[in-house]
Length: 320
Image (tube, rainbow, N blue to C red; front, side):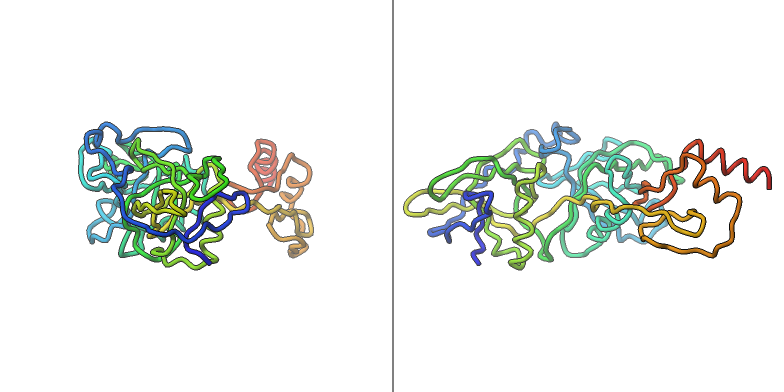
């Protein structure tokens, strides 16, 4: 299998021809230092490229919440504006606020696990710093509000420019075809390219197959690597090496929740769950009220605490 992949023949996700005469080139996605501070914290569309941060676990040994959580730094940038408007190479936060991310606990744990891996950047978050937090004894240390979470596909430390890559709709009869658009994270720089070279990534063919299928998703993929140029039959093209790639975390499709138990009192993701058949008055509330057995914010199945259900359970408790 070729390690040079393009989208010239999408939707078949065909392999491009092995590129000839490749050579490095000045990377037009490199950030311009003149807009370094001005662009910090800039918000844009879901398909945009701003407000992306590398995140790593804090290994310092001191009292929580001053230590022990996470450091964040803007990718492709030399400085980051922290929660208190100070500027540093990276900023500490004692709190990751997930309220805007729509990710269950399992996905949050995946991000944190990758953030604690040593030896490189294996986790990215999109979001913004806030000046205060309400969940630690030191609210003035602020928090980071996560809107997106991305984790590395492979084990190699990412090197080079971080870029978001997605299919642009261009179709060509012959290679090389600039069918991919790349945007430098935290910059206004973009370019159309013909292929990505996964050779430096260490990814298996199976990993690459699964990864490139995400080109067509609205959010695309994120890669770290360097620009190169090549020619096929005398025709010039641009590509980017991939030292590692990142995919966006999303909740898995929710499976159905099922009502079980002798009295229909159990809400579970398993069918046919049984219980000790001893009736309790509160069990009737799950049948007589507007009770809903469904996925809860935690990702688990459970009874949604509607006003009707809460009222019924409250009345039973009062009578007992």
